[in-house]
Image (tube, rainbow, N blue to C red):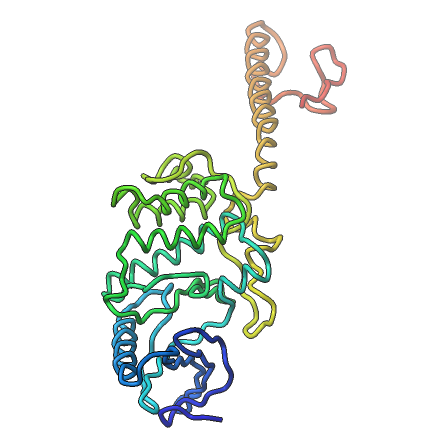
Length: 344
């Protein structure tokens, strides 16, 4: 097998695109697997411009190495082989969003919102690091077997940056294609992202906050935290009830099946608001009623004995007697000497 820069042994092809081929490779210095991408010259480019293209891509890759965020693929370095730069990144095991949609169809709204929130968080981190994404698409979003959402495809030149507003519209288009339902709260966020109105109609901060709220189902926390009506959201509104959980369980590394966590039947229980728990809540009402009735019976018994003990003579209230403080139970004698009926 081919070894790049005397260090990275190419194992197999992970993906191919217009700008290059991504390989799974083995770092022979430490035994770790990495992803390695070469730089492909597009057809028709004059030969004297190829070095400029390679240099620009290398600068972009080195800029992307400054990004530190769990939703952005980690760039480990850049090496050169045959005059071409090869970008070394962490190896994320999973499928791209494009592959997932092709294999399993659109995602449930809450899972699509989770993916969108993580993508937007990664894009914001990249912009803050001075390495904005040249244009995110479903092929640039990796859904890891461990539940991570990772944005790839960085390395564009500064002149490729279309600006924050275009970035939000790209995310809106991505979510429009990825979500199975636009009639609910997620649809309002998508509409806001796609809105080409005045600059600042929707902000990245507001959009990410609202996407996370939709992903979480909009449920109030036990401590009374922000829920369906809280959190200062700028887009969307209304009650949030949803389907799946925002996160999925781990899939064994190297599993050939597509990323299925978003479509599984086990996605309803991750946020503590599953249907089974909501159905059990009304059972508390009869318990409370029984408690109130019991308290009234105790009070009635006390009053009864207090009134009865006002008279002279024997009885529990007579000298040496012990006053009763509980209702007569099964087998106890009532006022007429007959067994008392148990109270419930």
